[in-house]
Image (cartoon, rainbow over the protein chains, first blue to last red):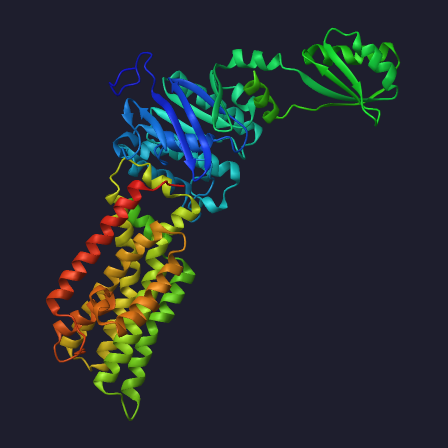
Length: 314
Length: 237
């Protein structure tokens, strides 16, 4: 790592070194270490995992209890000079209700010392496609519009680092696509972007690198595809309700994609599979061949918590 | 600093806050008006003690400033918008000072205006007395603003803290425990009024003019610095 204060080469832009944070007896973040380099990094974890606390420490809004955090080689806490290079969009959606969207972005630009104020404001508002609503007070905005105008205010000084905490909350599908496109463009221009989410698929579409946080600890980190592959190998429990559970269960046992089959007292079949993709294809064929009517198929452990639980236990 | 100042002015100019402020600030004016209209007007000592010292300097001034100044940061913390300011590449004092000036700008017209009109009515245009009361009220607004800005940063219950401070410390203790007047903003204001017009506000427990000026400067600067320090050290929600 260099302390040059620039984002060139392979030097980490953000370095989190053995960082912990506790509130009284509650440990929110525990001995977390990682580096973040230019590109998009996804910070994934279930609600309450410590993502927001970690991001608040990375931005200097909160102090660390132990460890160090540096941005461009400098301590970030109480370092206002550094904030001109960082854009932060917190998870809180509150805005100054009385303020017009354009005035909000302009105020943020002024606070961040932007030189060509009007041009920068119009550019940022244009990026989030809200020029038509910029003259309205933000109290009249929908949730998605508020998020977009907050993003414009975050981008207005063209920061080298973008830290976005659950930015897609309240966005509709079209806005999500636009947002993802925008982030990819910014990353391609060399920016460092950290985006937190509790939705795996949301991050999967944009982040090259992920950090998985569970119970305040770093459960996994690295290339998203490698982690995704590990996830695909994990055993799934699938619950199947059919007209003839015993016949279907005996047929399912023979499938290579199935590791174990149980029949619950209520007649539902619970299948354990390490290759759920193949099971999805084989199950309808099997039922059709045996003339068994399948009424319902439910994944039992598809929640993000169970995914993280699996990764932590590995 | 202009952006934070303008933002603060807009935040503190809510309809209800201003309405309550107008009602409270008009009470001494009404008392002054009544005092000039009745056949048997109160003595100067009574009017100074009850209306200027007790009602204006002891109750209305601190309550109005409490409602305005404590909200300058407390509202931002409650709404979780303070990060918009603290994540800006500006020193912390450039956030605290415009917040303080914004709170004073909202409070001064009402309180100082009330002090000016009330004294103008009762003292019948005696400009020495009018200036003394007006300056004393202005200093009171500045000092309470500095204290309550800090309180708004320290606790989410700044209003409760402020009420206890105003009624217990300034209202009760400073009236009965003589040493407390050295730590009482109300006593600084009254001492300044007396210092500017020695014919009036001559209480037995008055501080000297010099002590009042020195203490006022110390309190104003001390709480300003404490606010800057707090903003540096606190976890911003």
